[in-house]
Each structure stands twice: as C-alpha cells, then as structure tokens.
Length: 148
Ligand SMILES: [Ca+2]
Ligand SMILES: [Ca+2]
Image (cartoon, rainbow, N blue to C red; front, side, top):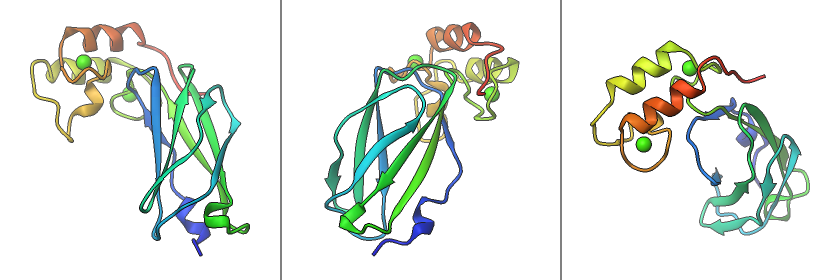
C-alpha cells in the first residue's frame, strides 16, 4: 500500500534541453506495476519501467514553456493510489523561479568552465556535460520567457 501523500510534492522545473526526458517516481516500497498518462500538456509518454522502488517513464516531444501534468495510478495494482504530478519545462530557468531573466544569464556565465556537479548541473542547459558559452547563449535566447 502506497500512501497518497507520496504524490504531494511541488512542481519541479526542468530547465535543460533534451530530446528525451526521463521522469523517475520513487516510492517507499518496491513497485512492480503502475500506469502513467499525460493529464495535460504537450508530450509523448513511453511505457513505465520498474526498478526496485522506482518507476520511470520517458517523455519526448516536450515543448518549451509549459507545465506537463502526469497522472499516476494503479501503482502495484492498488486502485486507490493515484495522483497528479506537475512538471514545468522552461529552458534556461536555471534559478527555477518560473522566469528566464538576467539572473539566469549571469548565473550561467558565472559557471563557465566549471565541472558539472550536483550543485550546478542546472546551468548546463544544453545537457552536454560542459558549462560553456553554448549554455550562456541558450539562456540568453530564452530571456523573457516564463511558465504560464
Ligand atoms: Ca529564472
Ligand atoms: Ca552545456
């Protein structure tokens, strides 16, 4: 039995560019079945895969500056467990505050040449493992965009 509260968390914002995004749902017990559908937003979802306490789905065709809401249900065949998980997609929003502005640009510039770590990975908006001018250019190109 998985508690409903497992799904009660705030929307994260993905700020990196990728053709495929993997969304991992982590539970407090091992999971072997479940379904995930897109309840709103533009994306194509793949079938879920299971590994220990994690269920993963891939998202492709995700457009920028939108909120995708994933509907998770029937985890471990427990019909009572369901929930909506919102994910924001906003390229360049390294600061995760729903707008791309000069703070994101200066923040990305401040990371130029650094190694990508668990602390600064959001500045690698091209998601290529390097913090370089391509990241700064991408953030600049999205200046002024925001999540609805
Ligand atoms: Ca921002
Ligand atoms: Ca990069």
